[in-house]
Image (tube, rainbow, N blue to C red; front, side):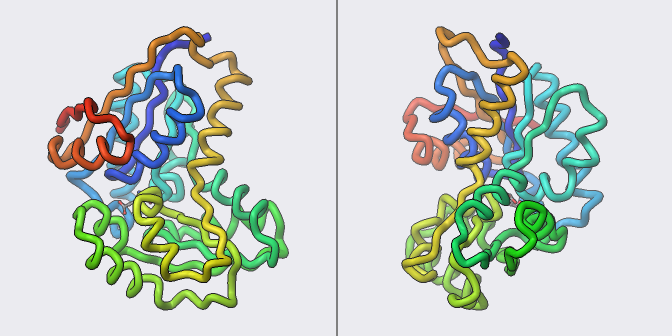
Length: 263
Ligand code: DGL
């Protein structure tokens, strides 16, 4: 048994989509989330920069004595996880392996499309992970670099829909039956994405599988919290706490949620 918190990181608000699923799956676990909004988007940055920024977030979480770290960011998972994992003594769970597993289990036609940041798409991490599970699956990818900043900008519904339509226009409906939301910001605009793809398309949010996988790992390693533990969830941003709090309260349906700013 281990009552220390689960640490989660992302470049910004997107990681909250993973926090939400983790809280739903493991209601008595404590969580600490850090979003690096001062440096988002990560997806347009060179690899070395993403690694260095992610390393800072990992250090912050280790200083809070978390028991495990979830990279609630596809870009950090694709770019920095393999480099940072051997440097620390805590296990890191990424989102891409879980997303790939969910995609391979979901597709009926063996045709999967992945949307993500430029860094995630260029890494080909989803292609490799999906094909490792079933090499017959055809994977097409589309970088949608405007979508994570769109979520952060908290625009009205019309602008949101327009940017989503424009970003996803190159997707060809007949080339996939399963669409992976390969950036943790995208579930926040899932309804806008839903409107521009075929009604038959199955959307995969890796967070569902990630929360299940994290629970399995904690159970396996004897790290689950006491089931009588009163949970406590802490939120930090390197950006503006008030802006973060507004979206986080809505998304997590918690009107009393507070955020602290860290440099
Ligand atoms: N939420 C992040 C992801 O899952 C990245 C957004 C960004 O900073 O570009 O890839």
